[in-house]
Picture 1 (cartoon, rainbow, N blue to C red):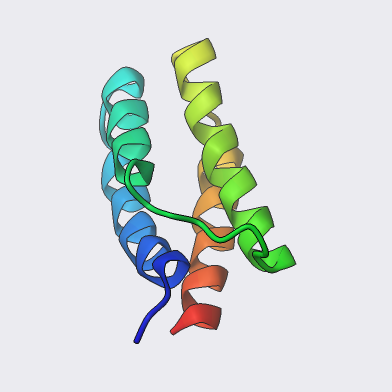
Picture 2: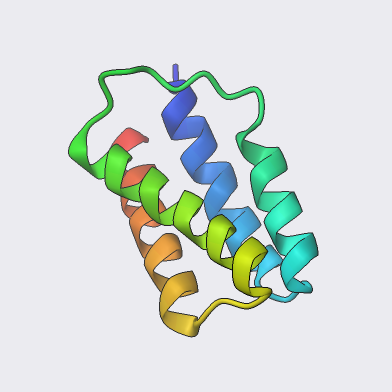
Length: 88
């Protein structure tokens, strides 16, 4: 059975790739909505923590600056992909 983190990571990879084509406000909302209702354990691994930080940072950047760099997107996608692979 997949953990909540693993299921979220798989969904997040797909959402990140799709949201990249959206306007920043819509992308941020879609990514934030995906996090709602996911119960993340307190004792997450370093990989999990790094991936979640990159994901949250991307959302904050999109909301604050109404844009995100390719590096911001790539970092979130790569870290979340690593987490998805680790948790599967």
